[in-house]
Length: 94
Image 1 (cartoon, rainbow, N blue to C red):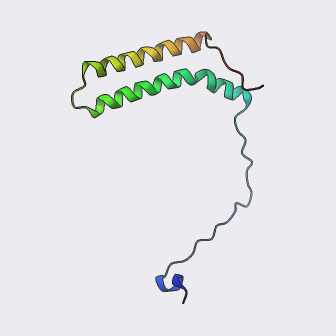
Image 2 (image 1 turned 135 degrees about the vertical axis):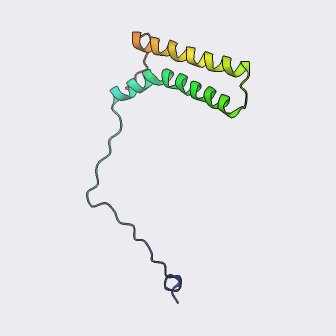
Image 3 (image 1 turned 90 degrees about the vertical axis):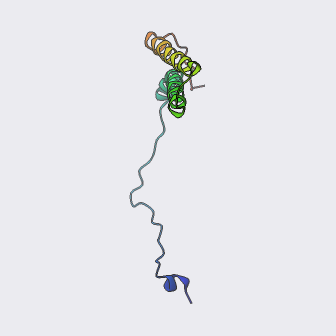
């Protein structure tokens, strides 16, 4: 007895796409841009972490406020460094 018939369930067939689209990764230039922006992205993540920590607590402490203030200050510093080009970019091409 086939268990598929007894339960009334049908088996799904896996079908390959008819026209596969080749997927290309980022170029070397795009990787360099991501590398240059990464300190700013990390700083923005610190702001989100600090805001989440404050939201989880009923009454944020002075330490929580300080953490958020320092994270926001870091975002400003990293954004300024990125806009003035003071960051050294490590090249992905060897």
